[in-house]
Length: 179
Image 1: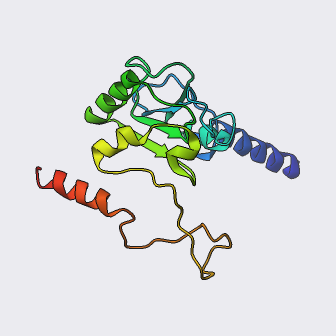
Image 2: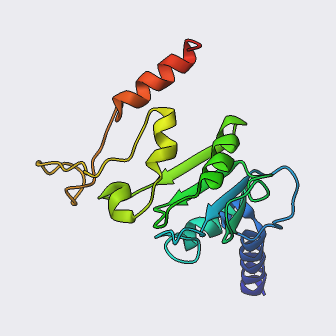
């Protein structure tokens, strides 16, 4: 009888962990107040929640409202978004899409742009048009280390207590000073 009680308690704990969002359980996506993360999939992104970010998308459901945009980027797309994710877009953006993204960022929205080696030229996009307004751009090169330290792959680098992009530091400093 004791074994049955223990297995029943273990089953209840397991069931609770399926419902617990902090342990990867399902959460009602319609809950109010959770930040909205929109993954763009309208520009043939290399990584989407269905290809490459499946586990991340699933985990984000614990504390966020993740969504996928497959249509043209518009004001409606980003109306209630807090974070907009572009993961290696492989098509060019229109001027109106850039205006929507720019106004989203200026209203306080967060924009996460991830690009791979080769930059915008290899990807076939024009994302630097937007980024250069904020003093940053995507380069075509990659960081490669020549000495083995902590990571096996030569393009994985540990950067501690440093600034990766001087122009980003200059832009942030100018904004902090009110310029």
